[in-house]
Image (cartoon, rainbow, N blue to C red; front, side, top):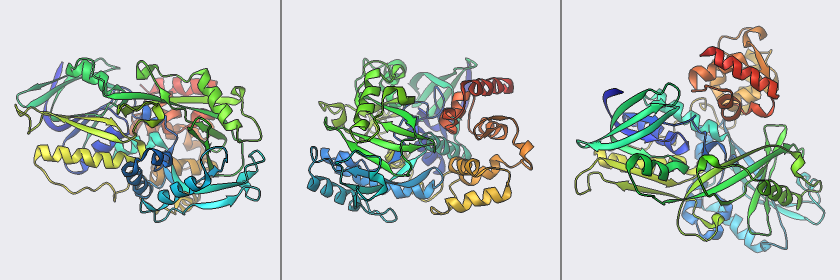
Length: 505
């Protein structure tokens, strides 16, 4: 076993959005940071979301006003710092006279528009579905709808960009690295990690440990910290299905269901439509989560209640599911459990024996990750007796150093410099990398310099960039979490990419 001599300010367990966001914020304040993720970054809950930065309209029904307000305020903050991977969307909510009353929806949307300090996003409007293009795919009988604003996001890329910025500010990001033991000694934490590929074990020292393991947080507390059967979180599974594009416009839909739940219908990766999410308790290990046949049928049936063309399980060409680690507040139904985050500090300067501090993070959501990180840093800096101003709201994430409305102009610039890159390819590169798309193509002078073509718009130069700069190691890392090109490649093309990546090792 190798032992590091450096004493880090904080050691973070978990490379999802909370862990990566905390690492970025802390590193930017000059703290010494190390983060360990047992798999790939964003390989759990953070890459299995509904791909929205949103306030949570339905949370108003459960009186989660503080959470909704905080999330609504974050939409434009995140759009500003990451305009490549986050962009505004309009969401159509058809009025169903058999469900929530019209006045209730209108009041809810009025609150949604005005409690969060909306500035650039358009306000809610009422539309006539008999005249508006968004009514054409719907069944007769839906005559009016509300149209409101939220933002779309490339969820896994949000995680990776936070980790990249943390690394650029001197944080150590260890992927495929599992924490196998953590114990207090001489006022510090001693943490042992094992690389899951090489099996090498390293011992680290840190002043504070932050447990941001998401769905695995209780498992980490039990296996690494010696807690007896902790029960802090409620695992709630959310599943999505992907079908071929079912309408021609760029708006999202939100549909109410008779059981009180809602689903989103989202244009996805240009050629597809995403439908989700389900919302039910998950028993067992988070890593065992799989979409059930009943969930696929539920989503198909729920969407078919609104669309003229029914959606059936045979239409489904892809699925994904994630487990949300909601704080267990005793709610009777999964959809009623709080989506707010809870931070718990154990030990630290106020403890009886002045033990090294452990901060556990329960719950949270993609939209509020940055505010969660700021809340964690308040605890961290109190323990370390430091004071630094919050900074992440004003500094762009890697590739996001351009104006919120200049996405198309950036695509044009890329095509002018690389005229042999198709418009579809250029849009995807700017969407994934923003201004750093020019780094992806830095050595490219001709079509041949793009290198091997793996299918769709994925070329060797991009694959090498991801391996060298974004911790990508295998085909899933690249096709699912970093480029979303997996939907566009054949099985044979997947296999060819996998073999190429093995040849690089």
